[in-house]
Image (cartoon, rainbow, N blue to C red; front, side, top):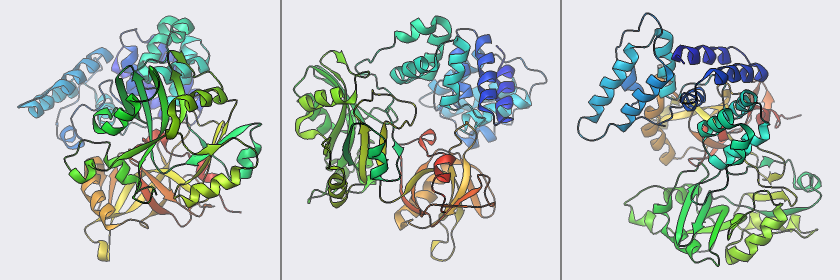
Length: 503
């Protein structure tokens, strides 16, 4: 398959808002791709190479200076191989070798293909093929139920792998995916509820648990071997030795647990989220390394040889209680207790509560209504699109943030407002240092960014506005914190913003 075929489909996706049309265009292309090409086609059209980051930034690509080819000749396989060569370059002179390889690739690409590759490699490819749209396209191309594809994707964690299984082996091949110890699965997510009463009324039977201001973790144990992953499936085992030792000591042979971890102050209250996240990277800061993390587990997906994903939460919760002991997240399923649990969670310094249906299986990939989050303070997770240079005391710092909500149909983030409120001196310094690494362009006042960073925003709802393309604008928006544990596809949608409209 020619790269030009992928580029043409990308353009067709960008030209329509219709989810149905996007799915049809993708499915048609997937049915034409050869088995060896399919993973790269899926990866390219969901906005990333199969290799992930290849070690070449925006400036390197902008300065390649390769004249475009006159006619399309590049195949998908050739592009994937060339990017693999770039990604594998290491050691002395690797930057030069990457530049030479990229220049050779771009010289074989037409102008449209060059533009596509540039956007792909800089993270700017937002033509509307988000994971949810691609999952439905894979199901259409393979003529299998969408739920079967979603489940396989949850278990594999890799969309190109899931696509290959679906198209080459159909429902049978997808059904062979199992929970594998040491391979993380995509986490189940929650939807917001307007009130505790609404959340309780939505489920026939439910458990109410603390919603903590911590970081999501998934732990796997088989014998003495333990792995710890973040919500984005990044392994952090080497950075969290105390969690490894704790899981290794649990009364079981094998287990997969879902939960939160956070650092606590001496009085038992949660430390700022950024302090918890600081433990997830490699650091030589002794003060950071000395900060101990405490886990709070709220789900058990596997225990001693038995997979529990399809079991209702009440069964998973029973298994959890047998293995997690003192490390359970606080909560109760008894009637009449929800308001007290919410009050005690807030008094302890946490965000609110989760209300979970006891009849629900573990399902990832969509924000369903089986898990509902209740937070008295209304917040949204939004994507940072740009930042303006500050004035007065903030002169020389990137300050005022442009904020975007996720387009549920896969288009680029939709701008819904700006704010500079809540930015501490530390955050201003961090933004000014970090944002140029994500820069795509700038003018006299603004630096525009690849839409990768997610920030939690506190707000007093939204209001109807013609100023922004989504038809709404944030009211009294204020930065709470950055969310390095989330990616742009985890951000709240424009529909979630519209749901907060006043009056």
